[in-house]
Image (cartoon, rainbow, N blue to C red; front, top):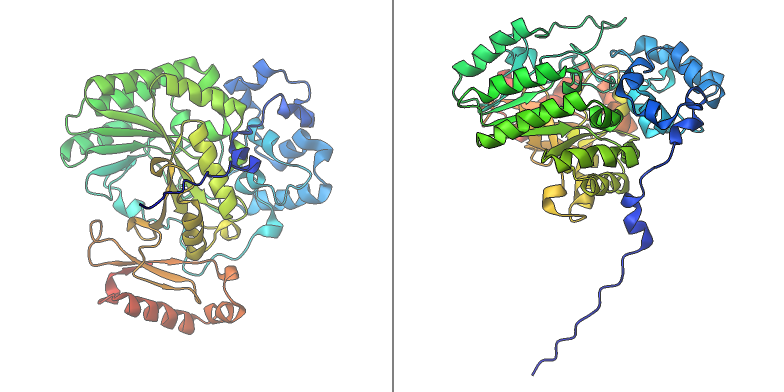
Length: 458
C-alpha cells in the first residue's frame, strides 16, 4: 500500500496582503491648497470639478513649494506641447508623491513635462485606431459586427495624457484641432436611428469623453432608448471617473440613482447593463474608492476595469499584480489591459509588446481567472482588440508586430510598433533611414504571411 504524504502549504508572506492596504484618512491635507479642506468638502464632486487643475499656474498655486521651481517650469513647457488639454482632479493631485513627481505613476498619467517627451514614432498617426473611418454617422464607431461605440460627450472629469481619442476629446490645444462628436440629444437621434437599423448590433458601449459627464437625465435618456431597441442586449457605460473622482458615486446621488434605474430596468428585460472603468495604478484605489464601489456593488451594478499598459505606471510585473489583486478586493473585475495606443505626444509612456507578454505571464495565476485581465493590442488601423501574444509575427529586434483580424477586417494585416527608444542602438539607427525602415516592415509582413501589401494597415 502506498502511503500518501500530505504536505502543509506554508502560510502566505505578509507582503502577499499588500493589496488590502488602502490609503485612508485625510491624506489630501498634505497638499498646501487642501490643508484646511474638511472631509465633507473633499468628497463633494462639484468641489472636485471646480478645483481641478488645468494650467501650470493652478498647479503651482495648489502644490506650492511641494514641487521645485524646475519641475513647474518643466510642466509649463509640457502643458504647451501636449496634444491633450490638462485637467486633474484634487483627488488625483493628492495621490501624487510630490517628493518625487518625475517618477510618480499618477503624475505621469496626467501632468506632462517637456523633459520626458520623446519624438513620435514615424509610423504613428493622431487617430491610430482609424475610428473616424469606421464612423457611419457622427458619434458612433461600428467596427465589430455586433458591437458599436457610442460617443455622446467629448469631455472628461480628467484628461489622460495617453487618450486614444486625443483627436476629439477636450478643447482644442496648440497642437490639435478636435474633431466634432455627437454632443446633443438632437444629434444622438441619428445614432439611435442607425443602431435601430442594424439588427446585428447587440452590444453598445457608451463612452466619449466620459459617461461621468452625462447629466442624470441623459444617462436615463440614452439607457432607456437603447433598452427599447429590441436587438440591443448589452450596454456598457464607460467612465474613468471611479478611478480619479470616486466621491461622485458617494455624493452625486442623482447620477447613481439614474444609472441604477437603467441597470434595474435592463435586468427586468433580460438585458445586461454595467459600468466599465479605468484604473491604471494601484495607488488610485483608496478607502474612498472602496466605499464608492461598495455602493455600486450593493446596488447590483457590475463594474469591469480596462487598464492601459503604461511605462513607469504599471509595466512592472509586481505592480500589475498588485493592481489586479486590489481591483478584485474592491469588487471590480480586471477585464482588459491594453497596449498603449500609438497616439501623438506620449511616446515616453509606451512600452513593448514583449513587456506585455512578460507581465501577463507573471500575473496569470495570481488570482481567479475571472479577475485576471486579458492583455490586448488594439490593432492600429482598425483591426480591433487582438490577444497581445496572438501576433502573426513579431520582430523583437526592430519592434514590429503584425496582427490579423479575420472576423473584423479579413485579409488585412495590422502592424504595431514598439517605441524606438526601447530598441537596441543599432535598431534605432535603422529606423532613421526611411528606406531601411520600409524594408524592415515589408520583411515582417512577409514573415507574417501577408499576401497583398496593399491590404496592410499601419
